[in-house]
Image (tube, rainbow, N blue to C red; front, side, top):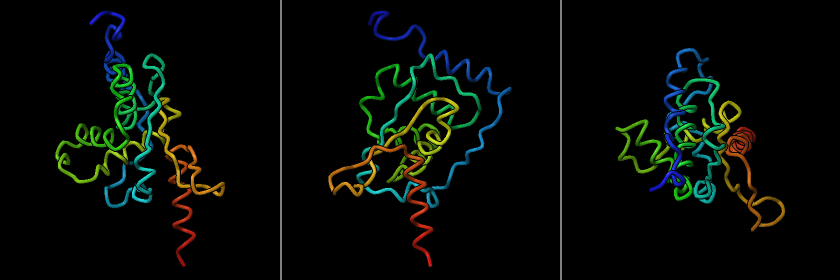
Length: 166
């Protein structure tokens, strides 16, 4: 491997984040439990099309501390290493879940990892990592999936759930 393949020290931003974390404001986004996560509202196609778009690593500087912020920084590092392009959203959620919740590695569905992706998208203005999905077909026709941010789609689905209850 040569110097053009990888950055000189791709995890240096993570060390810088850990050095600053005690002086940073805590994140206000809470993590949901696997049985209450709004990620359960998504359809199979939507779950299959989860895509993460981080900023370049040198631009990703979390302004708050918390699990979503550290995970966003790790995603930017994975992007820098060229690993993120080969992971589906489902695999990415499994990898995040196995890292942050090692005792949940045998879970059938990575609900904790998916909820972490939701939290990352909710806090994207604080670190720059966005999560996008292809939402269910719109009024334009059955084959026109909408490209939409994950947290906006979850807000749509939550509003629909509240509207359907008597």
